[in-house]
Length: 308
Image (cartoon, rainbow, N blue to C red; front, side):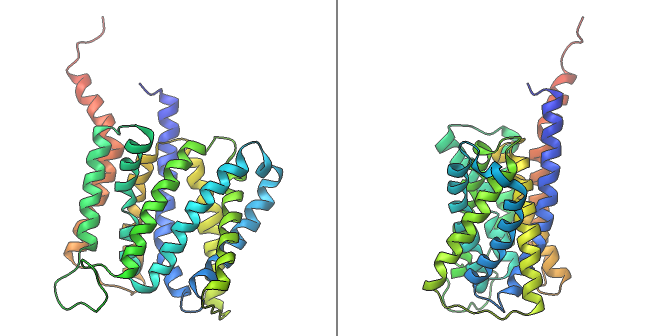
């Protein structure tokens, strides 16, 4: 049974991850717009260089604490693959579809958790996962009507890259839970961001580079570098030291809902009843995953005889 202190810390961590999803969802549109002025790997290099500079300054010698460099390097590879697949994919899909498909990590995390960690999630969490997955399908399934060339099973290259991002990010979520400590957040995040910046820069000689240093691009680099990378990955690592990977994945399923709302508010897309129904299912899945255990314990307690 979880102690009240541990459960309270878990609720605070889950709340922080919800706020993180709200912010990350809004940045899908920011990144989509930034790709009009820079190629994906130039943008990633600039974004993570800014984020790494902030975190390295804050972490200092904590980057070299025992085990931090090795764990951070492994996490940085998965984080780089996630952001590279997602950013390149955004060139060939819409912000909401990219966010919805990336949200499929809600399925990959419990699957990887069972296979790799031999850990079975709670029933309420599994119900939340299934509902979130059905909601994601409703949000992303191909609408009827003419489709442009280049699709496979109703999905385009950008969609498939977003699914690849979901798989690599699921691995990142699982390893973050395993590696994150309650005291070593800054060093672990600094190593990750520095690793992603270096890996992105190493790709530049092999891609077609494009850079127009407009105010919009500079703003996107600063917002995504400082807030969506340094602060956000730090919050994620702090939160995952206090909750489980599967709970985190269910919460992260909220990100596409927030991305859709941002995309609609900014006039980029119009969503119909099917999309909003899918978003509602995701929200319900998160609520069941979060509130289900407490409701179940309360229902069971009603049938217990009072203690003498």
